Length: 535
Image 1 (cartoon, rainbow, N blue to C red):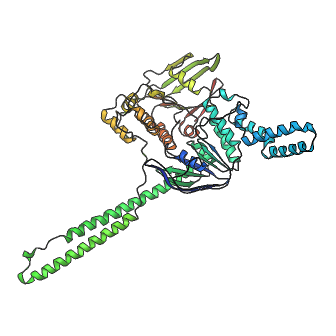
Image 2 (cartoon, rainbow, N blue to C red):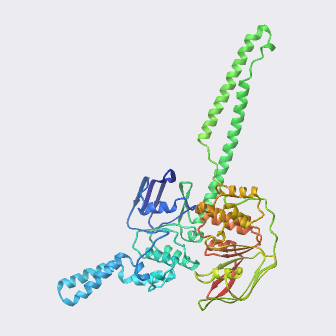
Image 3 (tube, rainbow, N blue to C red):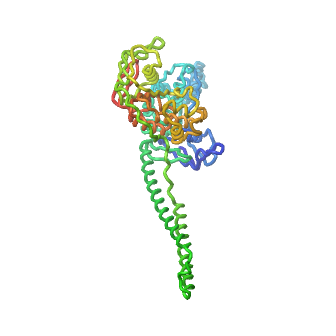
């Protein structure tokens, strides 16, 4: 269905990727993963034929449907917006032909038969049933006005339109964005049940594991394909990395041994003859032996240099080391109170509607509590009420001396901060100037502590967020959708930070893999209440 040969894409003097070879067959589901800014969207656009490659060829077979990360759609209602043009046109001709049947002519009858067959071939009779299934799975109302939809809802409308479009190959860019856990699980089932091949770029590890048959990773300009879903693919990659590390270590040992012997032979070959030690009648023989020894040792040194050169040509490179975690000598955070938060009869009312109703909650030291539930169920509202940033009824008590670090969905905690140093000191005021430089260097932030936040790229802001979490000495972390805008590696680094964090965590997230691996307790927030389950 899709074939790439030697594909490259270059922007200015920067090569995004090069020498990409890939084939996608019928029924295959290929996951595309990699760092933010690594070229996944660029590669998908090339597959879709929206951008021409700077080198190589892209060959497509059949119709291609593409879901972009950011797109708008037309249509007065949701159902109008998701109806493919092919169905819409066939329906219009069928309705017009039906209206002419009253003429009673043979031409009108033939026109009706042709229009009815075209409508049937376009899937018109079954379309509304299929549309209702898709829209219900994505939490959309068919008759809702598109003018009143939020950005997240419009994203789901675009996804529904793609799933309902006739296509031989579907390309999806971050399809689980703005989907809650239930919507993502529904999408997984839909894709698995479809016989259409899919290529999708996503950071949702649970989605990737559930759907992908192969995983392609874009890393430092190259594409490597592994078997299976994300977890299986990364296990294979780790095995290959371990083998590469062993081969590289063996190469280094052999090279160092050869180089040491080469230097020894060269040193022996450069020793000058001491003619004073030879008797007069032996001076000629002594000079001859010394010269011959120099030639032999110099030749051996040259031969070993050639061995080293051949070894270098076949050398196994050192595996790439990802720098996402901090290793700093910081004082341990004080343990904090055993009773971290206590809520009694916690109620929040908005627009005359109770979003949270008389909740009784207890958070204890060491808990890692994940807040789950549908979009709009009240997770962010609950976090804000517990932090005291939202008016509420009832009582919320904090443990004595509790220190809190809070991070919003869109980086609201950085508001009013100007530099990288300001952001790090805001997370931990005790950091020294040397530590500020050390943190920035470890996570690859440019320019030192004085670098302005406005000059950071999206990926650099991500690394700064992870650095802030790594240096904070707060006893309670309150994180609202912390995986938003993070790539898979950054999510895994966040996961490691949370697992190693000695304090308490409140975490609102749709990332099922993160919740499954981190949470010790789960609060399902919906309908104004909270249902607790084990982590």
